Amino acid sequence: MTYTLPTATSRPVAPSRTAYLVASGDLRPAANTAGWPTQVELEGFVTDALAEHGWSVRRVPEVDPQTGHGFITSQRMGLQAFQQIPLDAPLIVAEAIWQYSHHVLAGLRTHRGPILTVANFAGRWPGLVGLLGLNAGMAKMGQSYSTLWTVDGTDEWFRDGIAAWVQNGRVEHDTSHVRDLPDLADSPERALGIALAEQLLDEKAIIGVFDEGCMGMYNAIFDDEILNPIGIYKERLSQSALWAEMQWITEEEAAAVGRWLEEAGMRFLIGTDDATELTQEQLTWQYKMYVAALWISDDFGLDAVGIQYQQGLKDLTPASDLVEGLLNNVVRPPATSRDGSRVLYEDEALPHFNEVDEGVAVDALVTNRVWRAMGLDPATTLHDVRWGEQFDGQFVWVYEISGSVPPSHLIDGYRGAEGWRQGPMFFPAGGATINGVSKPGEIVWSRVYLLDGSSLHVDIGRASVVELPEEETRRRKDATNPEWPIAHVVLHGITRDQFMARHKANHIQIAYAQDAAGADKALVAKAALFTRLGVDVHVCGEVDLG
Image 1 (cartoon, rainbow, N blue to C red):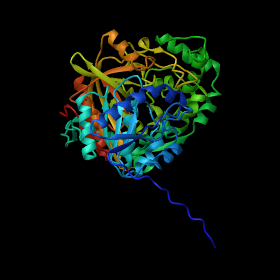
Image 2 (image 1 turned 30 degrees about the vertical axis):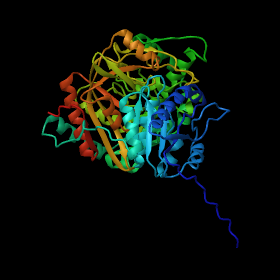
Image 3 (image 1 turned 45 degrees about the vertical axis):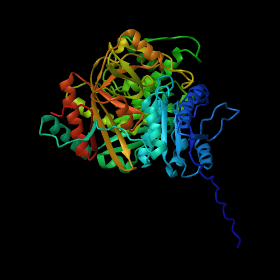
Image 4 (image 1 turned 60 degrees about the vertical axis):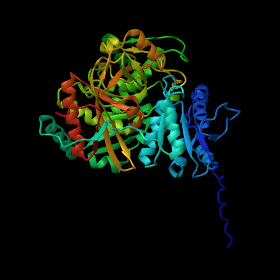
């Protein structure tokens, strides 16, 4: 017999003093087109910095004359691009917009040369968020990388980082703010955390996942073999089932949700142009999704739930963000069971892990149980680590997420919440946000993440949400997404660059306590719970462990 053997791929030889550059892009064409000028600017910063050392940059692929940009926009395109890159070549991944990590992860997984990820430290486009998500994906798969960020390419810190990378193939960062959790002293909080962990291990919990793998976030997918040993099991659900359930919700049931929100003081910016403005019809569908999500959660006895929304539902129904924020809040519109006999999850927050980020699912579930047991408001949310700048002598982060913040986190609660239409670029079907400014107060922040595919970790620390002058808040919102809720956050004992060097996710989880002492105690209980589950706990920054 005669067999047809495959022809081995012929790869180019890596030229000396040359770095290859790729840019993972969005799956949504409009975002790639609109963000391309910012990407060009970032790549200019990188090219200029390398040129100072006699290095050149070779871009793969070249700019597509039909699309007008050079982003890698699919996994297949990424596979083809990496065939043009020598396996041992120095490689730069430059990100100025949100990116779908799986477009490039296959090539990065098998790349043998030094890898550097770079982002623009700016608010207008979420390249910073995309960088953190990509870094987290490589941390999960066990691929080594270096990372840098810059505002305008001129800062000495960035230039020194480029110099180190071209000389040594790596960039070292200061992570002295991180330490492994020491043995906790006996305390009521430690005892509480252990007891809650043992309850979880014994009774177990179910998280409902409405389709997995949102927006290329490989880092947000946790296998059953990781979750089951800590007592958490998945109920795999389809977003098509959510859409189908929405068809059964009556107009009257939907209208009751809207009336409740208006009576609670929430205001909606209503218009008539469905393509660009928030309309009553969009709200009605969001109210139906809210009831449908509670029905399905009740059907399966879920302890937490996550709606993907992007990509599929975005072309079918308005945004899930209004629903997500309401579910995370204790006080919210009542929804009854199908037979009308019960109010579902009455006087409880049903933890929602936005964008089906399963690291958030674990974190939100744990936080909910600790905070409830301590008599604290269990409302919790993730934010994108969006951006930040100095203000009045301290670095104040902009934490922002697409409208899914629980109202109890906002100044004046529902009365401080406004429903703005989601931007047409990312949300063609519209829908309301829960827009507002997060109230000042003491918070615990955390992130559950994976290293090397199988090792479960959590970073945890303390922070303060601060109140900024109205004009500064407006400036920061206008520099990012003014339709989304914002939190002004000061991390305790962690610089900007320390945080960026360490953080292994595009998201960060926050929950409020009543004061600093209460936040310290809640952190201890949460750390004790994770430790008892066998999760590696890392304390970040200035934390009082009692």
